[in-house]
Length: 161
Image 1 (tube, rainbow, N blue to C red):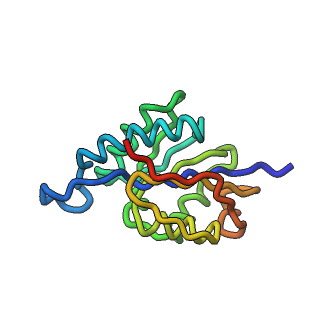
Image 2: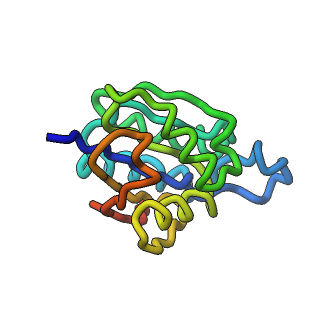
């Protein structure tokens, strides 16, 4: 039997535009700081466990995962990958293709439009990924197969705290 891969696509929570920071350094807004823990609760209930999180190093993505990941037990390993910031679906597929086969459940924490485009490319379904949105996809085979398989969308939510 072919193992299934599970990809959890997480868009960062609402960021704060009021401080004038560069895009990369923009922190979470108050709403984002409320939504991110609720997102973690949703993940704990619906996804249960993750083997790895690949997170954009942008401030709002890192803060989202810090707050959301604190709700998971056990807490998965986290890798910050510069390629996640501003990545389109092709770059995101490259990140996935580099994952070892022993990893079965991965979350990508990042930004739009790349994440929504990835969900559409893998599943053929257009899903709006507002801030603090999550889409859970799966397919048979390895991470390299993601680009060539039709993934199913197993769950989808926009979480508000």
